[in-house]
Each structure stands twice: as structure tokens, then as C-alpha cells.
Image 1 (spheres, rainbow, N blue to C red):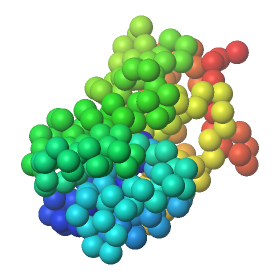
Image 2: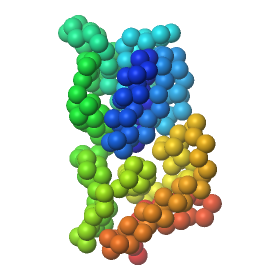
Image 3: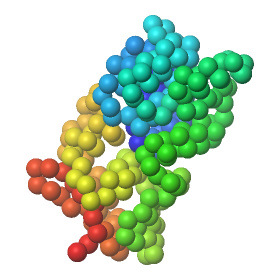
Image 4: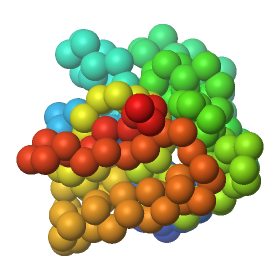
Length: 224
């Protein structure tokens, strides 16, 4: 799952990125409102963490423009202000949730998980196909035969596959969602991680597989 963080305090931005990457999110960071809007035009993000007080365009203006454009991306507002009127204004402008600085890392992750779950139509933190399930809270891929705790990229790839069962996902889509546009990583890294996941599914005696569709991408499906 890919998030955009718009926070002009660079030390705080770095700390938030570290928290989110430890929890298996991919994160791009921007430092002003205009840059945030520019990044969001790509349509690759599953959620936005948006500070209110930013240069060029403040967070509330960014939020109002997004909603006016019909963009319904989940938005968590961050601010140092704790007055009730500020919270009401943010929520009335279209924010999904509101968090006041300073905040607890676990609360930040829990709020992001809750708001993106409804956006991606996940009813719980568990994704399943066939006899395989992925716990999005513990990052465990499991079957009746055992379990593996997935590393960051492995988890994100498996999450994307399980959120789109029986649909072809191009290598370019994996790159956009997991490595990002600015990455210098070669596209063949996708095949490397697909191979890791295939080996784990085999070890779990899964009744699903990741099949290669030549010149198209990869599809997660039940075994015939």
C-alpha cells in the first residue's frame, strides 16, 4: 500500500516515514501543498497524510481542492493545533480523520489502517484466497501447513495480489505502487520478488498460484 506524506517539518517527516516503512507501507514525502497536489495527480496512492500548516498551499486548501476534483482518497490530517474548531474545520472540509501532534506511533498506524481499509473495501485486516490468508496487521502469510512473516516488499506485493484476485497486474503497476516513480530500481526486481512469493506458496502447500501472463503481468488464481 502506497501513501503520500505532506509534512514540511523534515525531521518529523523522516520519523513518520520510518514508522510507516516498519509497518510495511511504501511512502513518498513532499514538503508543500502544491507538490502534494502534483504527486496526487498520478492516482497511485491509497492514502494521504496531510499537515495543515505548510508553505505555498496549506493542508486545508489542498484537501478542499482534492474533494472539489472528486478525489476521494482517504486523508488523515496532522496539526499541532488541538482546538476543537480546527478539528471540525478539517473534517467538514473532507478529512477522514484527524491526529494532533505529538502523537503515538501505534495510534498513527492504527488510524491509517482503519481509514484505508474502507477505501480498499477490505472488511478486516485479513485477506484470503483459497487456503492461504495474509494478516495485514502481523504481515503473516499462512495456510493450514504453516506460516511465514513476510518482509516489507514481499508483503506489499502479496497484498496487492490478494486485493486483486484473478486480475492481471502488470510489472509497471507493482513498480508504481511499491517502488515509486522516482526509484532507480530495475523492473526485473518484480520477478525476483514474485519468485520469493512462489517459493513460499509452494512451502505452504497453497492451492493458489501466481501465474505469469506473457507480455501482460501476473495473476493470482486458484490452482486448476
